Length: 212
Ligand SMILES: [Zn+2]
Ligand SMILES: [Zn+2]
Ligand SMILES: [Zn+2]
Ligand SMILES: [Zn+2]
Ligand SMILES: [Zn+2]
Image 1 (cartoon, rainbow, N blue to C red):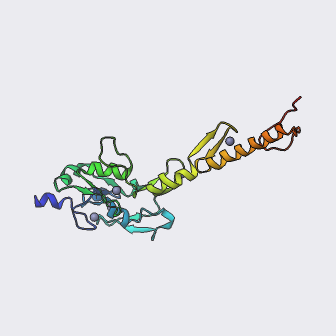
Image 2 (cartoon, rainbow, N blue to C red):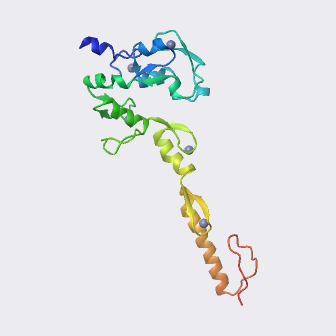
């Protein structure tokens, strides 16, 4: 049992790996000690975009001697999930979400992986992790899921089609937009009642035709 346990010890934090991953820099790295997903992401500064990382290169955590290019954007250039270790890892108890303010606990590595990469199934007990870093599906912005799917989504991408003026209106502006049309209608109503309609009278969204 101890020998089996040794195969899943993280080479960075020296605890039992949570979501063990392997380096992809060379063939040797694939057979060396795994590391926790989160340890590797921190070690390589992957939660920052390439231009904001602390360094340009870093020695591989695997101990193979390779230099990793920190200008690479994709996580696939740094590590590969070691799915074949899932079964072994599950024997050693549940896996806890590495984001402190989340901290949910999962029976299996697979369930935690889905929680972090945003692919939970309807049968899962937990939702996608709001603390995990993800990419916006609509504009490629990278950030915590709670920002990307929260305020960023509503400010930038949540558009509602206005049937009155046939334009897309931002979700956060829809009440103001409605009030604008309401005011325009009030004005029109006032003009009709007071018989002060003029052709091309300058109302932004109405072309007013002469009423005989
Ligand atoms: Zn670790
Ligand atoms: Zn290597
Ligand atoms: Zn979480
Ligand atoms: Zn976006
Ligand atoms: Zn409108």
